[in-house]
Length: 416
Image 1: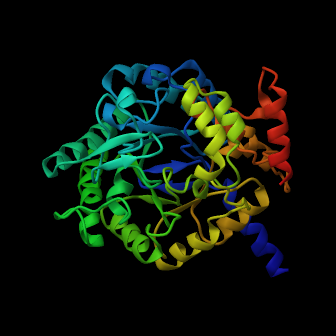
Image 2: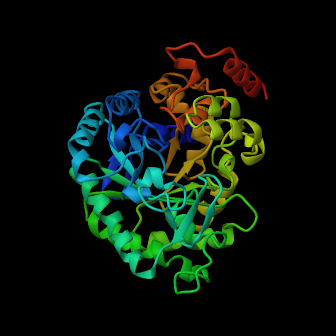
């Protein structure tokens, strides 16, 4: 009898409030900052507003607007948000719409580093070190030491702009092989100065950023950091280094950590799992040579990593054990109420979802009604394949009819 009562008590966690720094969410679900590709001209659109309003109306505790670049040089895509004063009124409309539905509004801030091209970001892409990025493809310039405090201040300015736009929380992107991650990882940081070499040195740029972020956040904004538990490839960061990174972030004042993994440029499907729908991805591309290059070599450039539900859980539990007092947010492959409750019962403070809430914005409300609620995402990753060119969308809810070749690709991938 006691065991049954304990289980019932645990299962109340999902829809109980959770506090992250100065912010209290109505439940423990967060729409993760998956890139929407809904910002033509690097500014918010009606489509962005409508999508996040639908997720908020669908019952989520907080919905996170994705991947806002803190400078123009931080843009990866031409349909990505660039956080600057001119777009604050448009963002205020987005946060007002989210708040009207009872959810909190978060925004992810970051800089792509070497994951860009001059025609998008306006300059030669920058990183921890000079080199060549095959995935853009482009040459990359290593940042000068005197540029690093200036870039850190841009993150702080991003927090101030986010507050002005009405956001309740910022999520600093320190993973997935973007700029902070490029400094942290020994694979991309070969600097010979005090920002390279030992882990202590490789964390220095992150330290600068967090100093500016926490100063700007003050006492009224929640600060969340998305970080890698593993980079997902040989020569990248592993748990022996990333657990100390997590401890440092908490010492620097982060209110919660999102535990993710993978490098977009080196191990993209480690982040998302499953296969990249190469035909769908190339179908939407405008550049003819890139289109055919992806068609011919895509399956070797973007190898499949098998999907399983809660695929980061094993590593995340090691962080939970190492950081017993930290607020930790689980992300990665959550598509059912049963698995979400299991994750929360294991001691995580909240969960993030992306594809589940693209597939079904009202999934959180449905979980309230159904013990065995499960979203119908088939993990073909069509949504990811198209987001690099046009807006992210689930193939199950398109107004237009898909070409037969794309339908067949989706069917094949969803059977795997």
